[in-house]
Length: 140
Length: 140
Image (cartoon, rainbow over all chains, first blue to last red; front, side):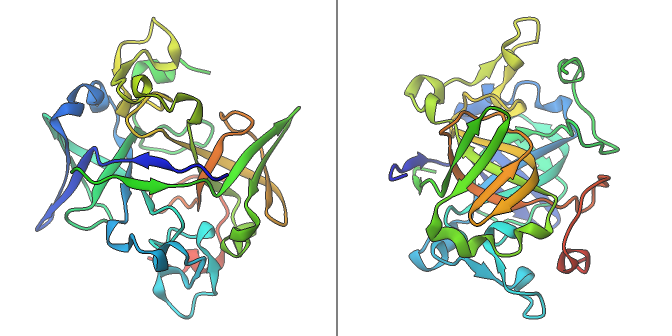
């Protein structure tokens, strides 16, 4: 377990007033084909403001930065301090314009680097109000 | 958007017969505190067998490698071919023994590097059969 892996931004989060946009780099335009058939996406971004040895060696936190919450391992939280600074948010798609996706909200900063987008489907867990394209419904 | 980010394994997937284990590196033991209070975790791992320029430049696939499925952008799928080779699986915890977590199943290989674990909670989406610790229920 000594190998390192390289990741790089594929887009950026933009926040202005109440509007939240995912601006995907134009060169990944083809990777978005069909995404409009989903109601929700999982957005993976990088906690770039915490990319320090200190943040990456933090193993326990009080969840939600609330001292009343018990000290908890970062793998049992969504803390922005963790060995690999990957953030995960399930977001609702509001609209799509080219390589720009408007979402309802995200707990990221304006300028956070987006590293991946994955369509969301509930698989075995039943979640109401989730839409999927035909090819997904046909699996299983 | 030119910066690269470094990630590294924090554990490894082990599969033997019907048993699926996440073996977390001992040095991250403290990061697991409290994880037993969750029924489900999101496991992030690396598609290490696809870490080639070809896989990372693939932008469209037929989902589930089925030609009958329409050509689709990788961001609208969970394809193992994508710019950043991060895999995401929602898994049910069966048992925990030290830094080894037994899960129900995962669509990874024996030997896949684990890069992050995040507790799973349904937040605004209602999912039955999900358990969360007290501190999470108190949020919102």
